[in-house]
Each structure stands twice: as C-alpha cells, then as structure tokens.
Length: 230
Image (cartoon, rainbow, N blue to C red; front, side):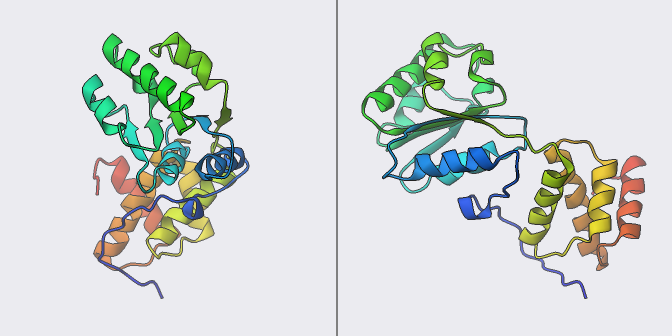
C-alpha cells in the first residue's frame, strides 16, 4: 500500500546521495578527490548539460567553510571577492552564465590565481568545455585544462531511469518500472523535464490519495497536454 507524506522534500547534496551511472562516474571520482584534503589534486572542472549533476557534485565539495556560488546569481566583483575571502575553497557553478562584465571577469581570474597559487581547492562547472566559455578570461580558460576535467552525460535511458528512482526514493515513494518507462517515453531527454513530470504525478497522487500507477501517469499526462499544470 502506498504511503503518503505531507512534509516538504528538501534535496540533500552529498556524494552518498549522488546517483552514479556510466556517464558521470568519472566526475564523481574526481569530485571526491578534490574534496579529500589528503589528495594532492586541487583543481576540477565539470561540464555537461543542465540536470546532469554538476551542481550536486559542486555542493558536495562545498561543505563546511568552503563557499559555493552560481553565476546565475547576479554578482558584483566586490561581492564575489568578499564571498570567498575566508573560504578554503573556490567553488563556482554555471561559468557559461558569466555576464559580459570585464570587472567581474578580472575578479574571477584573480581569485582563481590566488587560490591556485596558495594550493587551495578549486572546483568549477559549466555547460560547455573550457574553450567554449567565451566570456572567461583567456588565462582562466587555459588554466582550467591544467586540472581534472570531466563531462557528465546522463542522456541514456538507464541513467535517466536511475535518476527517476532516486527522486522517488527521496520522497519515500516506490515508482513502478512501467511508470518509469512511460515517463521516459513521453518526456523530453532533459533531466529537468523528467523530474518535472514525476513531480506533477507525485502531487496528483498526494492530493487524490492514489497510488502511482501507469493509469494515473497517463491521466496526468493527458491533463498536462490539455493545459492543466499541477
């Protein structure tokens, strides 16, 4: 019998909760090395499409006093420098979102250089390989290739299935295999879209106190296509 819970789901970021598959195993190994104080490797760059797990790994590294920043957030050069002034690690997400701001570009390069020179950890990510990050300082682009570099790819069905099962497990819900197959067949290949489809199904299941089954998944899909969003 399906059980229902009213508490909100708060995602946890840690290496133990990361869903590992063939397309992201190297990235996980590299991230764990960066987080290990005993490992001499201190520089990591991750790249891959949205929803592939880059942020999860960076936030797993950014624990304790190590600070984290996404360039999706509006950031001024002074705020950037202030945020990392006392941090033992420089963890910056979404480098592809770097605005066309010469002062911010220069501040990020200076921070990188300071952290690298002092032997502190640096972990960064973006959707594209380093040389395709056109708004970075040229020096920073080349330096990113000095360390560990890994691409995350969760586009295969096995990886996407594992991610859906993990999202369901976080909500203490068992997701039947036929429902997983249906979501994979009807949603786009973007991980974010897959999770959104599951979230809609989950909300209807909770609201109507119905088990998650293939017929319910089909009902929710039809409602969504008719313009009803939960």
